[in-house]
Image (cartoon, rainbow, N blue to C red; front, side, top):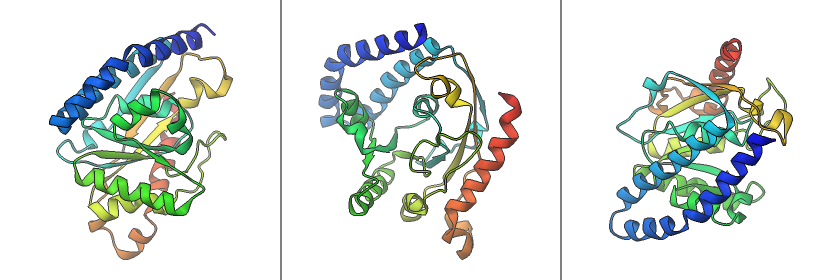
Length: 244
């Protein structure tokens, strides 16, 4: 429980002590939106790295050279842990917003930082509101912000399985032409979920696949892009199981 307590104390203190920074970031954003995005990225990256250090998590990165640095992308990943966002966010080379569940918007202070970082909140029970969220993601990509989605729709609690990828999530790439970057995460649930509320040392492997351009796919592949990306992530996941 020592690691869990350490993470909890750090997060609470960070959220409280960073409140003045939120105001400063808001002012910066009034004059220079890009500078605000990058400074917020740096601040939260530092905080997330501290959390990973406290947890004692070792992270192996594969294929990071596949991530385009000169344009926004749509990251698509499997989802087993709350730590998936923390582990992947510290690697993004440019401002990146995550699509998270609507309930996260109710958490004081944390939701403010998430909004500063271009995160979007998805109401999974309201199709109309869900469409608005996807369109907001399209607008962000057009402004140069990458988006990360977990198209299973929720954390998958069964090890070595995958929930069907929702095709609608890929509309962001379809409407913007942004490359789709498959992002496969192995063993993140070993940090917390497998033995909650304890946090244990774990080895996580993250692999970035080669970017996929919808413009280069035939009609059938475009129609079932979710299934195509899911297959890539599944194959990569089982390939990397022996590394953790």
